[in-house]
Amino acid sequence: MTRHKVLVVDDEPAIVDLVRQLLLRRGYEVITAVDGDAALQTIYDAKPDLVVLDLMLPKLSGWEVCRRIKEDEEVRSTPILMLTARREERDLVEGLELGADDYVKKPFSAAELSARIAAILRRSGEEKTMKQLTNGDLYIDLENETAALRGVELSLSPTEFRLLALLAERMTSPGAPEGVGKTIMRENLLSCIWNSLEYDTRAIDVYISRLRKKLNDGKIPLLTIQSRRGRGYRLVWES
Image (cartoon, rainbow, N blue to C red):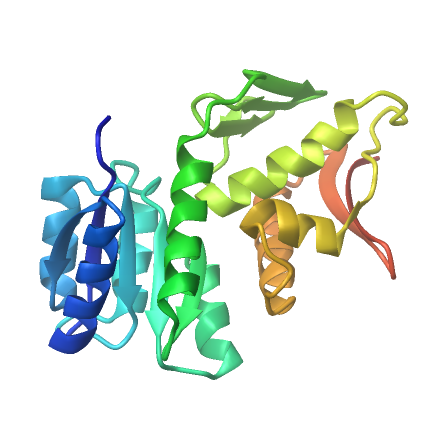
C-alpha cells in the first residue's frame, strides 16, 4: 500500500520534529519545510497528499501560501490543515476563506492532530459509489471532484466541493420537491464535513457564504443556499 505523503511547514524546529515523529509512528511519509517559499517549492516538486501549514512563517505567510495553492489549478486540490497559535476568530476565518480544509490550534494533542489528518486523508481518498449528480443546470462529478453550473466549471476548494455535493444530494433524494433540496441541519453538516461537532460554527458560515458567491452567476433561475432559521440549510433554484 502506498503511504500518504504529508508536508509539515513550521519555522519552530521543536514543532516540526514533534509532528514529524507523530506522523512517522502512524505510517505516513513526512517531508518538511521551514518557510513559505520552501513550502511552495516542495508542494510543486513533491505533490504531497496533505499540507500541515503554520500561519506565521518567514518569507511568505501561511495565508499567502494557502492563497497561492488554491489559485493554481495544478495544486489547488491539495488539502491544507492550518496549525496555528493565533486564537483570534478573524485569523481562522481568513484561512478558511482562502480555502484551508481544517485547522488545529496550538497547543494541540497528538490524538487530535492525528484524527484531523486521518479524517482529511480519508475524505480525499475515499471511493464513491455514485459517480455524478445532476439537477437542472448543475452537474457534479463525484469521482473527479469537479462541479459545473450552466456548463461553467466552479472553482471550489475540497471542503466547498464536499459541502455542495452534500446539499445537492438532498435535491435528488426521493421525496425532495422539484428544484428544492431537503434541509440539512448545521450539526449534520459539521459531522459530515469534519466528522466532528467540536467546531466553531463560524466555519460553516464562512463556507456557506463563499459557496453562495460562487454559485451566483447572475442568471435566472439562481442556484443558491437558503438558511432556514433554527433548522439548517438547503439548496434551491430561485426564479
